[in-house]
Image (cartoon, rainbow, N blue to C red; front, top):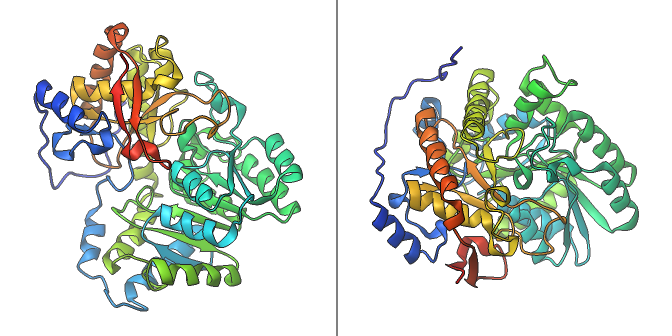
Amino acid sequence: MSHPEPFRIRSVEPIHLIAPDRRREALEQAGHNLFKVPARDVFIDLLTDSGTGCMSDQQWASLHCADESYAGSASFERFQAAVRDVTGFPEVIPTHQGRAAERIVCETLLTPGDVVVSNGLFDTTHANVDRVKAIGMDLPDPAALRNHDPSPLKGAIDLKGLESALEKERVRFAVLTCTSNSFGGHPVPLSNAREASRLCHARGVPLFIDAARFSENAGMLARRDPDCRGRASREIAREIFSLADGCMMSAKKNGLAHIGGFIALRDKTLADKLRENLIVTEGFETYGGLAGRDLDAIAIGLKESLDEDMLGQRLGQVERFHASLQTHGIPVVLPAGGHAVYVDAAALFPHIPAEQFPGHVLACALYLEGGVRTCEIGSLMFPPGARPKGSPELTRLAIPWRTYTDAHLEHVAETLTRIAAKKASLHGMKVVSAPPALRHFRAVLAPVG
């Protein structure tokens, strides 16, 4: 039985598949780095779901009613009310995006040698922890390192590893990333969040939620977690937030906005310290680097992302794409994530070693073959020592909300099938030059040999 989208399309943007020789020229000019390829030269853009989705009619309408006052705007009041309603945290601090929230928290709380533990920190969180000479320690569920393990709830933090770190390391705070972006986009189970909360609070360690994809996490739990079956996604999300001391969020993801983020907390004293940093570096505490129209778009988007019909369509599209790739014989991480399908590039290219970046080789091949832009999550994004031993070499196909049809994604599946048929002819990549932090954004690469 088909499940049509719970929306109508009222505006369209033309896209074009440029000729193969132009794609090759564009990739070479970009130093084989897809972040540097002009968007006009991309046919289907699955680089990220961050700020690339389609806003609703209500979000667009809100832009015309926004209050652009420098301080205390009505837009901020609506934004604050929405964040409080969704998360339950009373202290709300807007930021221009998620990495700004991470920076402010890390600069305020961490000192050199401190440790931050997580089920899987975002690459930008790792970078912000590193900037203050602290240590980011990923403790994913062991099942998350087994790409073809079909366990439905692989986004958990390793509780034994967490308990050991809390006993032996100078842990300043813990982060539950909902969902685990680096390990398949899988949800954090409610029981795991409860136990992580108990362990952290028994040691006096604050627990934060990275809420970038909080609604997808809740939606998957409603479908997969026996603790949550039959419950509303909004209720599940609120319970997970209730287990933490605060959250950081990139609202470009499950805020369904094009820019923005926030920090939300229970502790007013800590919130005031964070606001001091915000005012110096981002903007006044009621706009945080955002226009009033952005605050209004986020306020609406947070609630839309929890709409059961909208969320069901979102998760269903990812699941259908995941199933299509399996039908085409493409090795994918099991089960489907909430925001992306992850191809097991090491399994697809067993002849390309990790140090030659099989995930990036596949990303480049997807662009050359079909004009599809994607992102590697593996040894290029996370250099040696930055991830647990045995971490996978993946290519992430991130699907923007309400943007592409299943027919677009079938083009991606067919492109992958053609690549798989000639995989033996593809070879590894090497880094020619790269900055020390977040090197995947700006690295220049070249084919090996």
